[in-house]
Length: 269
Image 1 (cartoon, rainbow, N blue to C red):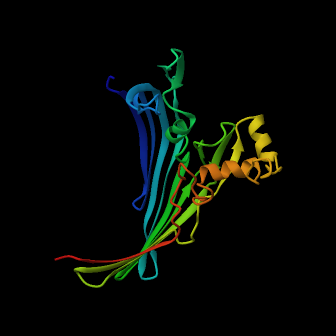
Image 2 (image 1 turned 90 degrees about the vertical axis):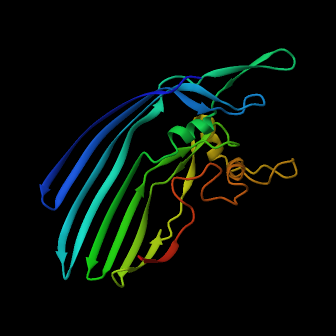
């Protein structure tokens, strides 16, 4: 195994429209040669190897408007986000030959479709945060709305003719801070204020996958089946029989924990 080699290119520009309005835009491109990966279980072993070359590129954007006077307080607005242009392999997945007990040889890919999806498509293609901060006297209010774009998974135990896609969602977080004294601050935070949960759906990789989605026939228990449709069986296979229905076996594009409350006191000695 040899060290990875990466080439990083970043080009950006920024502007200050007024004393209170500014923005930056950055383009980045990262090429990795001989990317080190941890393989699937091949035979009875898993190991690190130089897998393949990859490329990642995208655009980052940050902007803000500050010191907007509203009543006795001041409001700051900010918008930031990322758009991924490319996140992919630029080489085929290597195969490793394993000798079987009977002397025959079987070739195994170093990563399966599930791990490849986790590496390249499990993060949102785009993510944006729109926030506002308002301070008045000793009290501060902050609200952030985070947009999570679509993600794609190809879970283990699921038909290779299917994939899962998570629907874009917006998560709202709220924070209130009160400066009781020079040394004491009270903070109250609500994460995921509107209790938004991940949602996903099966999508077809090919005609066979579409046939699974369209098939509403039940596999009879009398014939040794489950009493469910094939698509329901696929769902059970990736959600531990529905126990983790929000995020599936491989996870989701944001937390499934729903609304969370946090109250904290900060005292400076």
